[in-house]
Length: 276
Length: 276
Image (cartoon, rainbow over the protein chains, first blue to last red):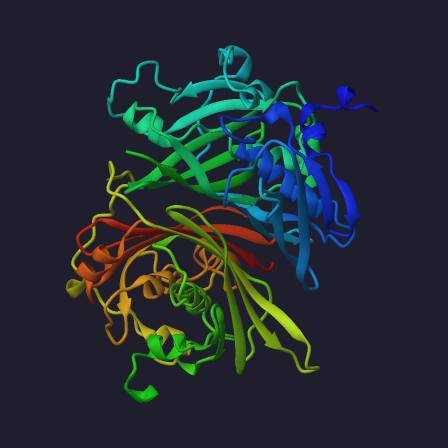
């Protein structure tokens, strides 16, 4: 199969193993953001590097990605290491490395993750599911002329759309939307990780002012197992994002992703740098 | 000053630098939990190792601690590395290492962190402050006979106390309480990190069943700067904890910590393993 036949997410995730946990890869234009890859794509990539490791135990439970420096268009290297393996859990560190213009190796991104073999237990969702109209009845967000990564998502915003006027008016920082990959693609863990980061910076909504902003650290807790993801297939997911505190250059943003049947797939948190 | 004159938190945090970012330390009985140190104490320790580094830039913004394996009573080594330093932000990886009974070095804990030089910007708290009676009017939680680390906190629970009867009844997983170090101690970043983990596992409250449970990964976003912490001094902090999803062996727990004047100091999230 050539690159052209792959879903853009799979083309972006392509890694050439050099040794167990050591991979060569290359940035992909399909998920380009303003000055580097879409952060959700990088999160997906680092998670994928773990799941490809021959020693990987179980499925993802937690992932934290730290955006240490810009990822330049070009080749990169990923090192994914299982630093501790217990009976049913495994702890990972991951590093994304690039050579800078002087030929020096730079850490652009770090991550830690926990994978685990789950056992069936008492289970319940304790966060209220938003009441949402069907995805078919919601207008699709027009991404004409928008950055490349936004073309990779079919988003149908119900509340908390990106402000129409940048007029410094105050808004509740909550958004609710339907979202899925574009073109549609069966849901898996890397795709879910990428989807956790689709929400635009809450500071833009809160202030109706488009200040420079970028994710510094992103944490995802996976509640779904692969069976729940497989059952979801290509259907729209329900997403919600909010914020708790904006303070002197950083705010926290939280998100929930439910499957189309209303069961939580993941909850996510990030701290985001902003200017002004 | 001898160990006996130090506050127990400072005694626990004591590290002997071996080289920049390399420290020798030893577990401390004052923060002992059932089978190892209190997780909040370990989070404080790893943050402290960063703040002691001669190259540390600014103040903490984000910290993620992964509890990879048990920390045994005895000596340990900490390695804190600034993997990337930008103009105003710095990214860290930290590892806590112990020798096992076979003399093999084991990773017991990993962490990543972001420190930053903050600049004054638009700032606002967007999470509702709980209405709470004064700490003086609330009954202090009786820790007689409880684990050692619980003796290190003065907790005054307003709602969501630990169940009186383990009768499998269903409860809202929310707790609200006043808390400070015991004996009182001026607030700083390590103390705040430790305080983010004082809430007992939400699964105990949710189910009124005391199942085995332990934090696997903990993330803290710091909103306060050192001036706000200094202004707080030894006063009681307001804490709130909740949960979003319990699923097949893991649940997520979130927390907010406000200062006595009602301004957010930190928001925190963790994924917690549970059995049954």
